[in-house]
Image 1 (tube, rainbow, N blue to C red):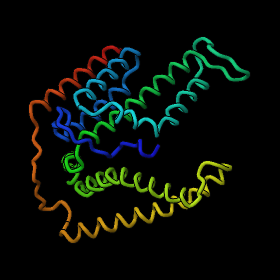
Image 2 (image 1 turned 90 degrees about the horizontal axis):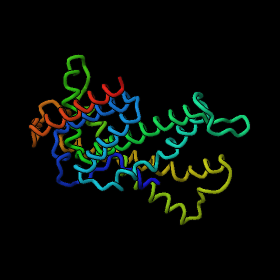
Image 3 (image 1 turned 120 degrees about the vertical axis):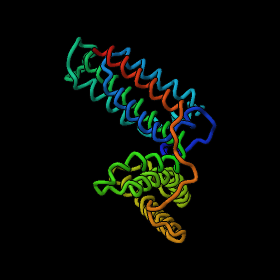
Image 4 (image 1 turned 90 degrees about the vertical axis):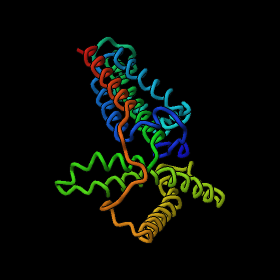
Length: 265
């Protein structure tokens, strides 16, 4: 399951979505997240899902790479659906087993929340798959730059967020290696009670933490050797510039928000 976690990975390919300005992509993602939380009707959700499918199509990222990102959160998604189906009351009774009842309103609300979570995971994963870590850092830093006036370290925050995203796939690969090494030594992570399973994870967690701190120290040393002193006076190889395709993408999503809001009203 760990290898299916695709958040933080970059899929290098030439597509329209890859060529969009990272600042615009970040703003569009926030606008889209606002859109899926505004949606109140079934047709509005279908429209939002169609918009996501269109974005996936023009990104040239394989569907399997995106839907693999759902597998690590499948338990949370299923739990959300079951919880709403059992405890949200209203409508006609669909199923009754003892003191548990599933009513139409609960199932309807659970389906809405589940679809929201699915779209949320897919779109945020699509952002990291279509934006390189350097471009993502520059985009976040630019968007946070107005807050420098009140003392917010925009460059440092952007760098930390991007490094954290970049470390996710590396730590996942490291945990896979450690798990295989421990299994070869006779460790068992799948049997026993819940407490025993938690104790069995100690030989996995301790080396993983040691490896993470070692990588962080090596990265800090490498940045120090290269005379990294933060964003002050830093120049960029590629300057961020908005183009017509960025304006068109923003206009399309803004029009979609207006359509969804109108359909909800």
